[in-house]
Length: 219
Length: 253
Image (cartoon, rainbow over all chains, first blue to last red; front, top):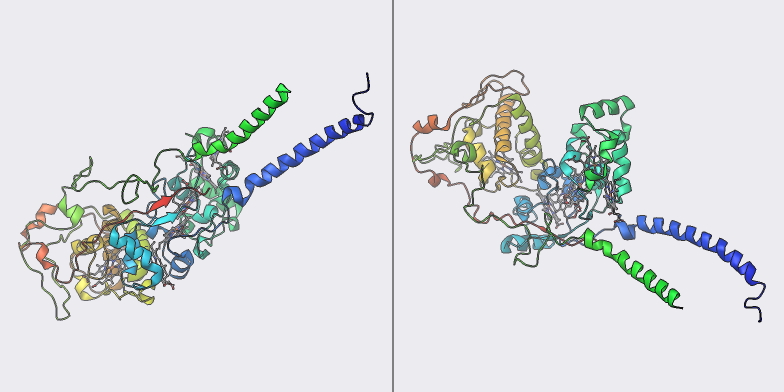
């Protein structure tokens, strides 16, 4: 019987073993990169909104507090989106003939909600709650970035599990005093270690075991 | 041969299921602000039908929930500028105790919801006014210093002239807290004069602490009786007060 394989097949076999390992490594690495890419996490992507609403104008320039529009952020899981009525509090009087605001006026006239495009969207098997974070010293900017200077909101962080866990393992360095929660320019890392420790005690932050237990977020 | 075919099928079906996580990511249930094709206005969250009273929301304490007195028939008087100067149909005492806590909360809420137009001291020079919003009257002129607390609550609730109501944004307790803070503000801005219905004792200049005045609503009914709703000669109606709730459309895929 003739030889089935040529002698060089030995080398190919060896090379293919090494090659397979290298390939698997590259594929694994590529996977982690792709999984964290903004394409999959939606990070930094600005979305086309029905109204060119600018946080920079309203919060940065005019000094409107987040809670004026996101009214339930301190009390419920959802931060709350402003109903059209909230816009009309001001825009019934100012810029009331601006073409940029026509969708708002139309929504008000016809009693039809404005369909904002969602920017942050966790999968529905994850439980998230704004009120506990806001009441325990985590400011908006720790998760959403400097919204007060964004013309249109984009997602500043990946919102992946590893990101949540990274903070839950040790929230201390992200805590800030009550007065700075809504100040998106505040940087918690400017606090000294002692101040951070004190905040951690004042807020009665629970143990690392509790904050990283699966049933906390997957309930 | 069969084995490798099976392997291919297995690999492919695995690849296909990789897309299946989205079934769990976007489950067929409605979260807050989700849109729905089922209802005409596109909202998944429905408004309660008119007249629904959820358990615990009977709100029969009229003084607390509206700041008004029932069965008042006196008409309000106006000054030369057409501003209302008497407020016969509103309560003149707080329907809840005013404590330091209430004042602190009032200060916080005032700074979020009111100071952007009325200014930090209530003088009517807030940022939005500087951007072109009509200037509101100062809280520190005599007319408003002498206005009963119920008037402030009524304005915060239903709006007044060019100002819209804040009932949908600020809770009842928080609105009363704001009113208490406005009273304190008026006293601190006018240390020599006293507002008629001021919370009594002032401990500090900055934030006078009121003694708890648990004023039962019924004690005020001796105020001149007159129909309540006819006095709104300065007040535009808020008929179009429909708070359209926005819906958020789908996910980011």
